[in-house]
Structures are given as structure tokens and as C-alpha cells.
Image 1: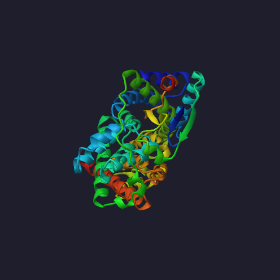
Image 2: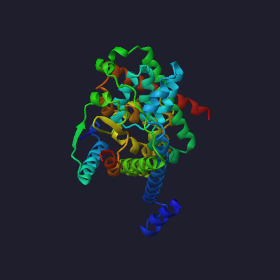
Image 3: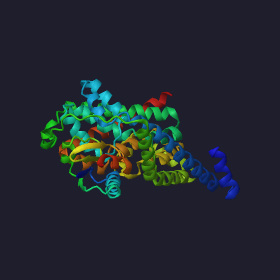
Image 4: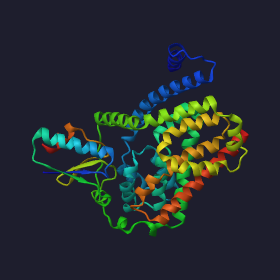
Length: 76
Length: 318
């Protein structure tokens, strides 16, 4: 599984990446977390408000920091 | 209640005399700090709930239905309520331009969004009262509308980076939040924003308290009062590099107004600190060329100066 975190590197994006890491650890799912910081790529993915999280190239939650629980639901 | 507590703290527990300069400055400091941080938390919560109904994707859809000046007015008003931090400005810009929203309307949104934000409004309403708060809100929207219209008229489309037009984002679905999610979003916003700005609020109020107690009124009124025609321009030029302390400047400005600085001059100063800032320009440079950034700064700067003179003029008749 591939989890993408979209955001130019502001504090919220870091928080989201940490939540994702925690969710992966707690569920034990095999997943790779990739940070996307390039504006072009972020816009191309149809994201207008950061941070955002995508699972297997499908944008799931954007514009807010998803909680560990929410991410767990997305990946399991 | 907050006033009682501040009085008790300063005059009884700290043993300062109410009649001294030190006593009144320290009281002013504690009273304002507690009041503003309390009000900020409540207001950010309420505004975040409203904002959760207006994600940028929805704004984009709403905006593509309006043309010409109505588009500018509507974009400017939406700029007030759409959640937006400076790191989202580029994706929002690309999203708007790519979906065919005219450049001028996009700029109306981008200009108003940072000028009118909940933190500035709370501080204005609580320190200056609702009349000035409302004036600020309306003039912030006005600056966005005027700035957007001028940029549209100048035909600046060629100064947008070419790749912006090549991106195709496609149709995105808008996530509908439930109430639990809205409340958790609002709580996070309170934590995030108050956590970020409280230092500046305290520093600003501290400096304001010093000015309140010590600054010579005659001197300031002479340089920045309603009779000095250049004060508005000077205020805008000084305000532009002060971005990081946008929140902290409001209590300072309030104290200065108490010492005779004119209202229009003070409002222009606040708008310049929030609307035009180097970090925001650096981010925008990724999508627009230097020429357009120059035009943007000039147009917004001049509009803010205009608003300042308008208020200084209007205040003569109130």
C-alpha cells in the first residue's frame, strides 16, 4: 500500500505525516509513506487545501489533519 | 469579571498603586491579555465551524458562476470565510485559474483572504469596538474588490507561469463533514492558531501597555495625527516588512490611537502588515512572475493608502 502526504512542509503537514506513521505502526499494515511537497504535483492531484492524505493514489482527506483513528480506518 | 480579576491581581496581590503609571500599565497589560486570549479561543472555534462549510473546492464552484464585478465582490467576501493558510495559496491559485476563473477574481480572493482574518477581527472588535471592526471588515473586502478589478483591467495573464495553464486537476468531489468532524476541526484550529499567536499577542499588548502609560501624546499626534497628510503613506511603507507581528501590532496601534494617531492611518498600517508580506510573495512567485508580483504589491499598497485617506477624511464629519 502507498500512503501519500501532500503539503509544502508546514507544521500541519508534519503532524499529518506523524499521524499516518502511527496509524501504520498500530495496525501493522504494510505501507510506504511518501511526502509530496512539489506544488505542481499537489495541484495536479486536485488538492486545493493542504494538508491532504491519499491512499493508493486516491485522495481521501484534505484541508485538515486527519486523526490516527481516521487514517486507521482508511488503510485497514 | 476579567477586569475584577486583573484589578485584584495587580492592585491587591502585586501591591501596585492604581494612580501610578506603572500600576495602570500593568493592569492594562493583564486585563487585555486575558480578555483577548479568551475571546480568541471562542471566536476561532465559531469561525472554524462556519469555515468548515466553505472548503476551497466549494468556493471554486460557487465562483465560477459569477462574472465581472459581482465575481470580484463575491470572491472577496468568500476570502473572509474560506479556510486558508499561506501555504495553501499556490494550490488555490492553480485550482482557480485552471477552472477558468478570471485572474482578477482570483486576486480579489487572494487579497482579502489574509487582510480579513478571524484573529485580526477579534482583536479589533475587542480593542476598538464593533464600529471600527466592521469598518475594517468592509474596507478589507473593498481593497480586494478594487485590487482584483485593476489587475483584471491590466491584462496580466501572460505573467502567470505557463505550467499553471497546463495543469488539469479534473473534477474533484467535495467531502461532506459530519458534526463530529467539524467540531474536531474547530478544536484543532483553536489549538493551532492560539498556540501560534499568543506570544505575539502578549508582546503586542506589553508594548501597547508601555505606550499607554508612557508615550508622549503630543509628539505622536503631531507626526501621525489627522493633520499630517503623509502619515498614511509612511504607515503603509513601515507596515509591509512587519508581517510576522501582524497580531502584535493591533494592541500597539490601539495604544497609539489613544495618543492621537488618526484612525485611517492606523487601519492602513494594520492592512499593510497583513496583506503584503515577503514570505507570501515568495510563495506566490512559484506561480506568477515578478512583474505581476510587483503589480500586485503596488495595486494593493495604493488601495490600502486610499482606504486610509478615506477614513481620515470621513472621521472629520463623525
